[in-house]
Length: 338
Image 1: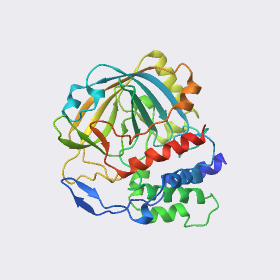
Image 2: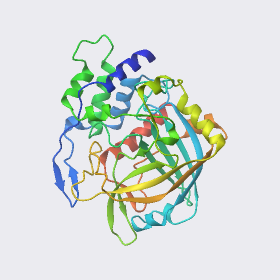
Image 3: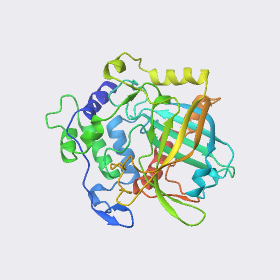
Image 4: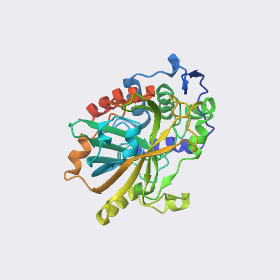
């Protein structure tokens, strides 16, 4: 089963690619048209599609293999100009992080074709006891525009075997979504979880105390700098190199990421995560994550850990419909692994 899944996902790195072209609604900033019926997926549809691609493991449906760390979040005063969220009011807060491989396969090698994009989930504990959850990938942008299209892609992966006649379901999907090629061709493999920049692929609406709103996307930049492996360097790594390297690094000192918000301008796609925003857009520093230890009970912490990235908070609300579906799909997956 494992070899079959890996072979099917090797097709990610070849193929023809790209996402759907969507119209725009002018609301000061460009927004995508509402998805058609074919583009829509229910939370259960998405979880089922993940199982179709990866199998049923009674574990996380996606980003299954991972490694956790704990530490603190120190907010920046700059953030208060954009959001009234209490976590930016000042003072350090506890944070729990989980780095992971993309695929929903518990024992997939870190060197497998299906491993990237790797992920970083962060959970900040606010002073009132509430949890602020954030999910990001080590790639700027997403393979498709809607959750429905993503479910279609995953089902195509599940239907594709090494002996499937051409064009395979994956090839057919990619031919109909040519921008996915750019996504697949640009995937990279980090030398360490601590040396990759992670991107929040979905947009949020931030509102400050004066009632002024901005649309933002998140970015997490490593203090250690960015370092990625060539294909030959990746082949020389062990099956668990990312996990082992992070554990060794944490034993020597903290892993630090600076958190930024990329501020949208007129014409930027808000509801389409497959469309990146120009690098000329302003980046506002929101604070710093300092990770310095592993959880005391690693197995229990990993089993209990889940994030709800679309959960609304004062001054922070989802602007991309995909976030709302993720918020409803993740608890389904969480329940299955219990």
